[in-house]
Length: 398
Image (cartoon, rainbow, N blue to C red; front, side, top):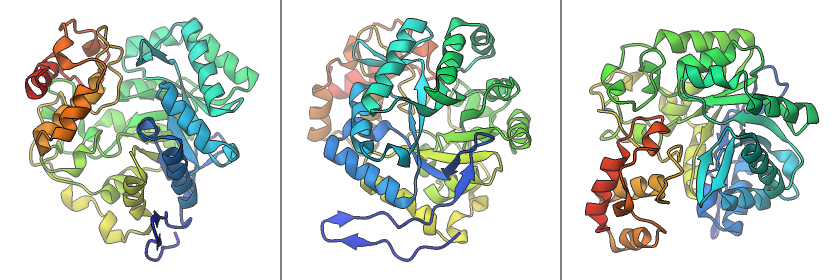
């Protein structure tokens, strides 16, 4: 890997380091993908110009892979605008089974809703196909068994036959389900939550399930070992989500399940050390965050060495929101992930007038929560959402 010199700074403009990216095969797909890639979350918070600037930096750095799970029309349209005229520069991993309903990102297995959601994705991206069609979040063995004989899956196969997707993938937080998918014979790519903390979860445990992080093991769980070995042997590509623990929790000693802070370079190096890993998908909100993460491309081996911080000093109690939006939709319209993000910021950094104003501007607030619990049936991390909403209502006053 060619090392970069110092980051280039120009007047009024920060530039990504020029391409020293390493590329890896995405399983048996025939695609070569950048070992660091970009997530879609930040594009919702940007305007068109900001989206283009973020995409400029990603492409200039050598990134050629993007994950688009969010069904928010703004997110999709911003990415489409940023890719206009250079669609061929980016390999798209788009999710199937995500729609925007009643103002919220929603997972669905209804075929008609799925069709509308997928066609909207293509239209807003300005393309007639995506390279990887990712079946959105399957987190239990029962869900997987139902999926394998469903009209939903028939539609996914139809999309591949029509050339609207080139390869079929599935996203999961559950190692047991991911292994079932790998052994199915028809899954080519798996999007999986992987980092130094999650690897120590027992069996098919989902990160942040109640008590899950209290049972961290000294080494990698055998189910995960089997998953990684199987994917490496059978050339099934894994794209990594939650590289930093979701919401950057591994980067802060106070929130890290292992009780110590990792650096972005250490987290990325840990994931890429596994031969089955094709790329680490990084969620960034702006060019400044992306520029900081791109330091990995010219980091020293000492900076990437994660071994010194691998022994856990404590285990978190679980129930930590990673702002992934899998809990949506809320029957009351509460943007749960955004409320939780604001609550964490207020509790960790203090409630500022600016943060209060942002909260006040939300279309619905935490005090509207009825404790129905529907969000908790979809949360892969065991968050006690009603309790968090009660906390937020007290902090923000409504």
